[in-house]
Length: 407
Image (tube, one colour):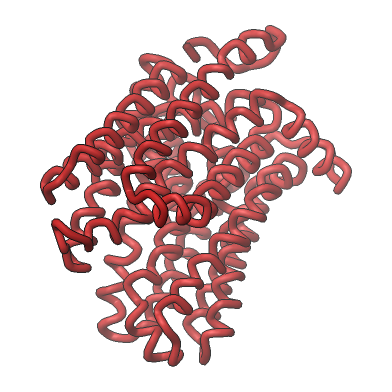
């Protein structure tokens, strides 16, 4: 394990920077398509829904392979797993740039998602390996900020590059991926990560061990529920804001909803520091309480300013929640961090992908208020689930290096 602290000029923190950059480029590419819909409609002679399905073509293979890549990194090697993921991700991006029709573009997005599925959960495990216990919360907070920044900046960067040519967006992304991979490879040269016996049986054994561990399952459930209540609210917010009494335009809706991501970028490091100072479980409870308060405020909002403020509070609460949850991911089963990270991230992104489908009938039948009430209930269940992990960790044998202070 490689412990150290300082600024990004130190060797230890340059390693952390490489991890943060690796966590930034995934959502950057995933969301870049949002700014390219009008251009891609024309280029591929397609409708907006047909272009937007490319997000699902990215997310589904990403979520699926996320379930296995961390376990593979536990058995084989974290660095090799990540570098293979970077290469596949870059190839998929170049395929996007070379796409001549929608079918090939969707295939290319699938390759992108597959590649990044071998990067994202392993980055969490690596951060758990290289950061000491007392600094993990802060580091996971910065990881959350990097991810949120990628989500927020993807459409922004793509929109500017697309002024020249939409294909250059994916050329830029491929170049950024390769540069990040080279930086990661350079910073982790000679580094050996903990790993178990090689072989397919070891992968299956580790997966079975993770699935059978109650704390891992409950943590994964909490991740699924957290993303589900967050995404279900945001998914239907744009339509709600376009209806009376506000009648907001697309640009106005985009500006209002951007406050969630912007607030999250600044709140994520705070959540990490709180996780180190107050403990993982106390910080998660605070985050869930803020998120539930945000859903209540949204239900009471009737003006644009009210929605801006409420969505900002939601971004803050959710960002504070993710920091301790990501920290627990590398602590509930320290000997198999990659496996736990895979199961947790696979579950939470499955919640992300399924939320619009599950709650569409609720929204159609009862409106946005029913979504708020459902989100409050889901967030409360997630909070209880996280708190139930504490006695499980205390019951572990003393040799389990979860560390002190996880109160």
